[in-house]
Image (cartoon, rainbow, N blue to C red; front, side):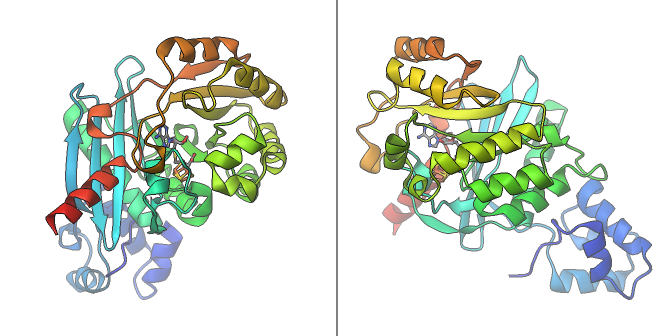
Length: 350
Ligand code: SAH
Ligand code: SF4
């Protein structure tokens, strides 16, 4: 497989072309990130010999679209791509009122964390994605949005498959490219990194990129319950994660988002809402409640709570709490579900 040039910085492109005049790298950058052409032959102001050398050694695009699904509400769309041995899911979520067009990107194929309630975690881990594979998810969806909505993406969230802080370098390189003023020019605040809680990664992000929004997937008000839901919580206990989150919060003026996936009879009791209030008292937090999206496997008996219980839980919280509306359920919009379904279909065929 030839490598992609999509995630190289301008300086890295310059280093790649040592015998070319310096402006060549800038021209190449413009083709990749402003015009966003699909192949080197279209890069008309580059000498033919250079175009040939580049296409001999590199590619501009590497994702192959395997499937694209549109939800019946037409607001949510989902792609499944293949890239080498990796299946990659990307979801586009449009909000009519907020006029937001948010892309939920994957940073891994599968996830090594293995959370009990997550289709991605239950489906196993293939490999981390490269920065170029992440950037390409963004560029493809941005073009699609521009064509269908007349405007490109407004937000990118790392909430698809994988744990971003276990693929830190690729995630930060991809975020740097899509926020570059000489490219897509997405504001740092329009980029959200969602993490299951890797303290060293949170601290590094606080130091290097405090302008990105941070979301922390908590899901339980106690360490014991969290360990049951998230195997990695044993290695990274709340006593280490919460202080790291406080440091991140001090590096920015914005609230942290706490994600809490509500599962009936597991973590939706009002006493647990009160425990959450106590646990998070030192954090400038806003809580995002996500009703559990049923998956198969060991978690097949779990259900989301009834709407009244969700509301009561929300009311018991002392923090601003939003409820994530279910979007695109008919197209398996929860992360990892499309890959699981497609892999099942492939297995049936064989
Ligand atoms: N690994 C990162 C980011 C990807 S998961 C993280 O865990 O934060 C993105 C979000 O989807 C997480 O908050 C996760 O808890 C949630 N999620 C995963 N499976 C879900 C399901 N079956 N129902 C509802 N939310 C789910
Ligand atoms: Fe990985 Fe996040 Fe799914 Fe857990 S919830 S398995 S960390 S993708």
